[in-house]
Image 1 (cartoon, rainbow, N blue to C red):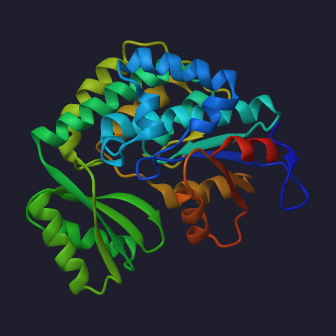
Image 2 (image 1 turned 90 degrees about the horizontal axis):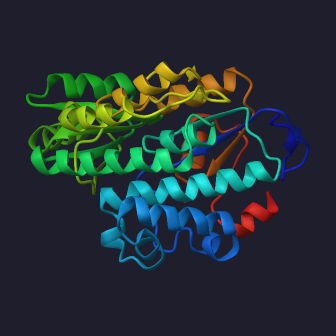
Length: 314
């Protein structure tokens, strides 16, 4: 399981699927899958029913401003990752573990067999809608800090009055902060004063992975505790702990606590490498996670599959 031919040459034992999160979406995503795969057609039909909107029209035709809305972005990314991961697995490309960035962790659990496509999409719908509402009820924002060490960013956020926290430890020298608008703005100013190479405000609808997501967590927890979740067939590395988990209760806890806690992505990739993963395959739209992997360790073998042609060549 997990052995396959590396397109760069040679055979690899330790394949892991990585599933992207918000920021990787783009208009047109998934259209070629719909046109070429019966599985994709079936999943899109199911998704339209569960979501109560024509999600494929939003994904295929946009406009971009609509697709960027959290309640559409998250299902769109989930749908594409699960379709691609399922088609790759059907081809015999079986990962020995998986991980996903933020929303992508839900795609990873589906591909690992913790729940089916429909159940996962219902969870994603509640997650996306509750996060959108939390952002409206308690306005917040996020920003990327480039060029400071993790502890330097944490020292800055600790000293700011108001709510601002480190939300994503993406790679060495890249930390995303999240919180109240004024507090994030103050932290951005302090980061520049402390030598950050770049400080980039993010176009998001809320302060994700921060204490401002408490009401979203409560809604999501109610849903998660009401559905059947199985032990996963392969380990999924949790955003919250960066450790591999397979047990039902651990998966439930990871999904619930994720909304208010930071994504430990750098540590996740390092732990996966130490546990025998030697090929990271980004499964879904975009190349964000491949880029982060290379910034974490330039020697890592990475590639991505985001369309029908690449599935055929994988």
